[in-house]
Length: 309
Image (cartoon, rainbow, N blue to C red; front, top):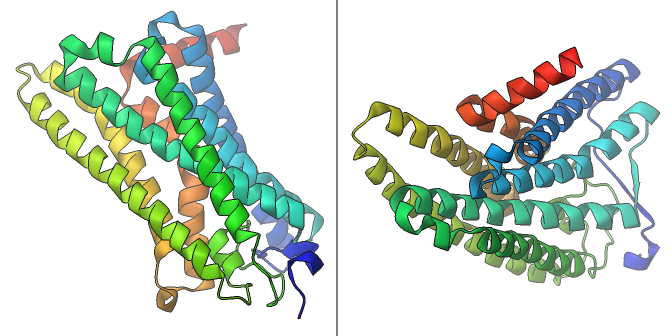
């Protein structure tokens, strides 16, 4: 039986068989990709250019926009190229790179979302200590810890997955290299090691989510004690978008990686993967800017500059 050394490429799942549908698939994903680039690029530019946004909350939002750009750039360009050129192939190294960067960027993003919950908790529940607890030095250290944790997580999962022998073909039932689909190609019980690593990562993810939920319980209690409706609106406008992003991201990732095999199907796996790998990077800029008056004002200024420049 062939082992890992004989696998030179993988075949990704094709969305359509006819040329017309392939081009439609390319155009749709291109539109989503460009929207993600534009939205996250505007947030990066706004936070970088407006000194009023040089605060811990917007520093974390800038990091989130960078991670979102990386996440969607890891999957969509290759898929669009395959649709345009009518192919399914991705090289072995390309597949390894996809797995590594996906776990690196998504892991860093989730840890960053946890830090953003801590930032909002400190700002609302402990405003007098906010400057000392979430200063510029502390923000840089926390962001570095998030990126570093994502990197170590990616190294562990990538090394464990691609140390397995593959003897069940090279067709991946997904439009990018996703670990659960790659594990189906393994012919060794050693794949249980990666399953165990995924379960441990899932436990850490649930732990972070519990921390986020407890933080928001305290936040909502504090917000409801604010006497002015304007103050409540401002607090909710910065908290509710973050909670929506966390809920969508975590629920779809956990379902994709830890769901029982009995409820797995190609169409369901495809929808879930789109929900966690494509939708959040594209809609996060909209979610964060929709209720945030400061960011909306800065973005309007940027748009006026771009239009009348």
